Image (tube, rainbow, N blue to C red; front, top):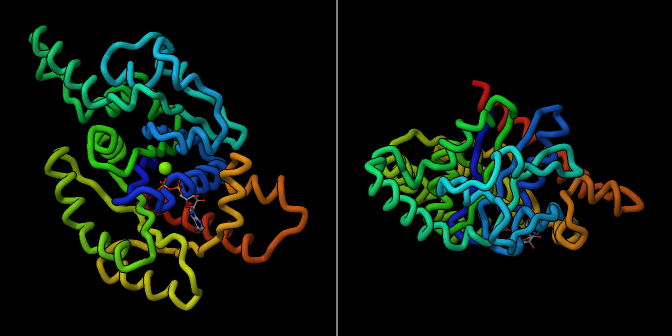
Length: 280
Ligand SMILES: Nc1ncnc2c1ncn2[C@@H]1O[C@H](COP(=O)(O)OP(=O)(O)O)[C@@H](O)[C@H]1O
Ligand SMILES: [Mg+2]
């Protein structure tokens, strides 16, 4: 069983883009894959994958209702099949108020004398277990927003490991230096062991820079099998057409471009490495 959260310290580093690419790659390896979109932003995984879900309908059942113990139906009914061989639990606008809603749910549990049972940062893990989701999938990937808070904590508590796109700049590399502290902090807060499956320099400008970023990360003791080059045309195409990158190349390129095939190949290698790390 492989479970991870795509994490980055800042927004716009490529969490959702790389996440979608990895999901597509895991599925192409014949694995049963579920993605969970915990990001309330409009440009989230749900948008990229063009999954039609009633995110604005507060009456509709959605993941938040399950996290606060107010479901409107079975958890399984939240699962959408995508066209790309994997499933998605879509985002919903109620995620914007997750913190308040969890606090309220905590108070209600306290009033009922069940406060000890209700851990606001461990709700996703509980809900997944209670609905038998881990038995149904080989891979579960959660995409939370970049900001620290209940979305991130629930994601990490449920998955226990991280895949971390890193901006290939001084600032991005600085966040790698702070990674150990971040992981320690999460471990203390969540009382769980957290592993880093991979850090991924994403959007690297020059080929000659790739090795430098990779070895800086490896020197810190983190796995970093590949760096992803700057590929605006490919990834903007994905967001324009709302699909993951392999599908984009297959459906929207009339001829194969060698550098794009090389990027797809790297993403595939990254997915394989992550699968192997989790098997060990
Ligand atoms: N390797 C890359 N090369 C060029 N552009 C990229 C690359 N990775 C991501 N992007 C672009 O960066 C933007 C932000 O990516 P996104 O996945 O939404 O970030 P996040 O989820 O971390 O906020 C998107 O427009 C995407 O097309
Ligand atoms: Mg995102």
